[in-house]
Image 1: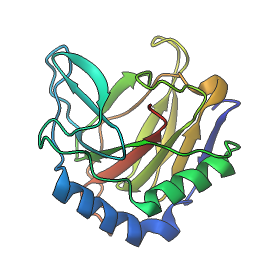
Image 2 (image 1 turned 180 degrees about the vertical axis):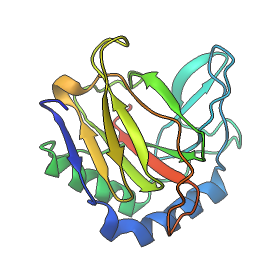
Image 3 (image 1 turned 90 degrees about the vertical axis):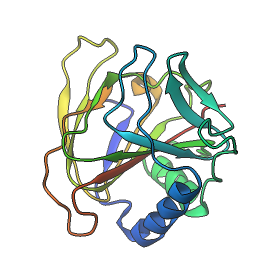
Image 4 (image 1 turned 90 degrees about the horizontal axis):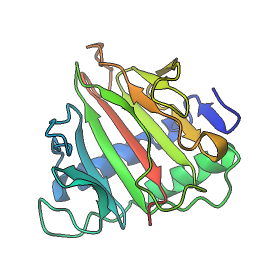
Length: 199
């Protein structure tokens, strides 16, 4: 996929019970919501955040904020298990010392998709992106440095962690529309969360 990209199959499986409890607590404080892009498009993926910073979008643009715009309160603190998983997965992929300050938590339902995009609202491109998949299988699209570059289709399963950084940090990526193939634990949904060094 790339010189600085690694897919860690099943890496998150030992953490799953703690992760699901943590997600429930995050959702209670900052519920999932369908954000609107600057172009007026309502995202099919529901989103919330945890950590010192949270990613948000509206008609004014894409950005990170320290406060949840829906609640007026700081985003929930990043759970210890989240930070530990992010650090250990990054180290396994060759990125030692990764300490994220933002985690985007996405909930996909059947038909949800994520169009090709770059993660470029962060200040620190030296840090990797660590992406964790739970629940239904997804087909991840991993492209090049231009939106028109060919993409590789990567199946992602419950417990998989994908890490990319370095020369691959700004590659375009997305998710194809999710098929309704219920997962034994999470049913007809996929939870994906991505760790970043945003500030």
